[in-house]
Image (cartoon, rainbow, N blue to C red):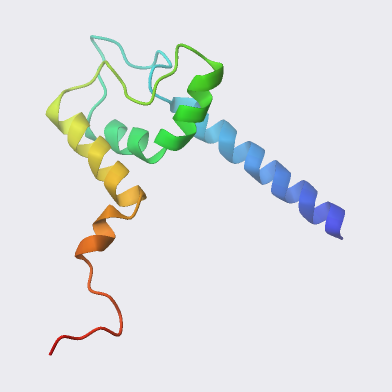
Length: 100
């Protein structure tokens, strides 16, 4: 039972890594004529930690797409980076604390 669980977990992690590295920045999907937009920026921000590790093994991969639409790509990218690392939690009200 334990071996089956380890196998399933390993398969899930391998599948997740394959899916996440399928559209990393710098993979050639975006060019100067087909640039990355807002939602690509959000996706690239979410997978930035995985892209960083992947870029150690492939010099053509980066954590930021150089062929982008400018402000909107940057907005999506930084929104995802901030929210992914808990930065947006700073503006949320904490449970149990009341200043009334």
